Length: 306
Image (cartoon, rainbow, N blue to C red; front, side):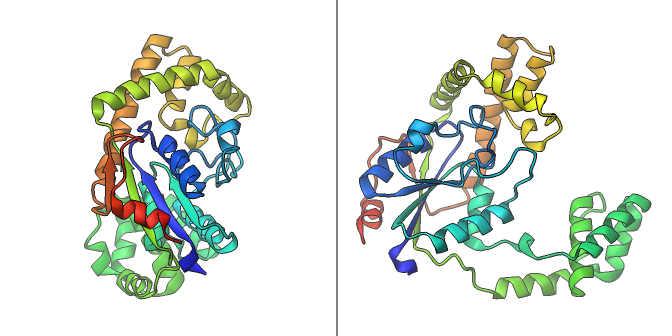
């Protein structure tokens, strides 16, 4: 029964202390921890993704960590399916979703338009059109079939143009008809939920980022990336993420250690800024400056009730 299951989302920028807070609350309120980070889902991205250690994972049940094979591609749609399946098929009372991937959380709670299935024949047809047509011709092809939608996107936005073509041709409907149909369906995320955010401020966060990066190097981050490159994963998209990208440049002789550290800290802080921009859109988040800050009575009541 959904009323016996509660969901707590712990969000915030990278290195802010979300994991520490999650362990405290899992222990106090008998919760389980569910990954909501787009890198920690991969089996081989451990140190550079700041995935919990085996010792930490032994503290309470953990889900959706390292369940995706190296070289595979994971999406918000797949995350949503995995998370809904987990909630339906397990019987814990409190699920603590932890991570900085705001899009994953939005997909889970609000549903996801991208989950609409596309016929393989249509995918191949659009792919063939993209290879033979110019951007302008592809855009005009969409405009002829759905002028209203085409009016709202740019001719150079080839991703949205091709995605719209796949949907329009697959379902034989306009994008407005497809979106209206999607909006009319109720989301299958039926669980009571609450949001906590951790944001210590930029100066404290910078210090935490620098300290965590040093610990990553001591734990074997360099060797982790060397192994992934030996497995011919250089072009794998996750290896272009912050930390992994700069490590590849260091290993390739394009950076020294000092330059590596400086660049990762700078790019991590940029990532943190983007994450906070996303989370600030959600007025339901109760913000803490650190994992040891006291919770509001509303959050305590939510976590305490059976």
